[in-house]
Length: 409
Ligand code: ATP
Ligand code: MG
Image 1 (tube, rainbow, N blue to C red):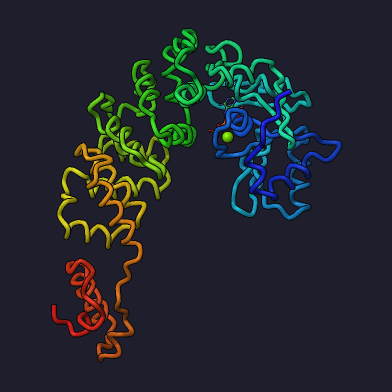
Image 2 (cartoon, protein in one colour; image 1 turned 120 degrees about the vertical axis):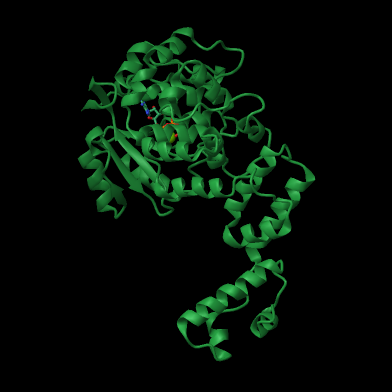
């Protein structure tokens, strides 16, 4: 029997309590999907999903009785989301069978059989379940070995499964580079089915495309998956022909992949995929229904496009340090260094260090200080503060409070 440590349980007593609560008779509940697969493979677990024999109404009742916050947007498909104290959303889905599918939506029927629930999932390694002791259940029988041997295998006939839900094409390419080992040939019929049915992607909702693509772009090395998507014609439909990305060995994406990026590289990868084109940003924002915050961030990167600004120029860096937080500076510097083939050089390191230290910079004046020296009108205070701040930035943050108050700049 395989019993890996479910390391994701240890730091979250609330998660263990949630499991216990939902596993009390007459219901039976197990962890499912990525968290089990990744525990088995000793990979970091990013999100936790659960499967349960309890009907959604019963799940809701138990959670609400225990004061656990719930979200109900997936109720129609049997999913209740529990929001734990650390704000981590846990999706709890009742065992189900998809009885009618049209490539996008499914009509579902609930079941009490784990094997029936397993069969409606996408890949064998994603149809694994575990209890809180780490015991793994593999109702289809090949999930554990496929995961361990590195074979991303559709459950059933790839073409039939993609016709039920075209999102599985994107999921296939997202899992392949991470979970498929080089020595195993990629199944021809799966690739052929993805290529043949790629036009179905056009009918998928923006939110679903966004979710899978952002997970793919958050990987340190998304290029192999993207290239395969380009070769099979899938990428055309994902990008809505807004852009034909450069995925060559000399592309920005290839250079970024060679640069260490301890923070999430998701946004710089997306930016590079879109080729830094304003039109592409606009169209993908609409097609993928990107949240405003992400879309705005792409425009920030656009405004500081690394080929247009000279990061070797100190005053330019000071202005950026004043305008952006460390995460943004990190991405700007990473893009700049990759674009100029300076990734992981001493200059790259120095720039990052300087940006990191800039977190501690604090503009030494406030409106109060100006009032104290007799500037009382609101607009005048605003203007004086702006001018003082500009002088402070231009001095490389060296002008102190006294000098700024004297206004001798
Ligand atoms: P990750 O670690 O990236 O979250 P995951 O496998 O957990 O990977 P999720 O999107 O969280 O992916 O989905 C949870 C589980 O739900 C999957 O493991 C799979 O069993 C099932 N699933 C998700 N999307 C589909 C789909 N389109 N078709 C069939 N099963 C799916
Ligand atoms: Mg998951």
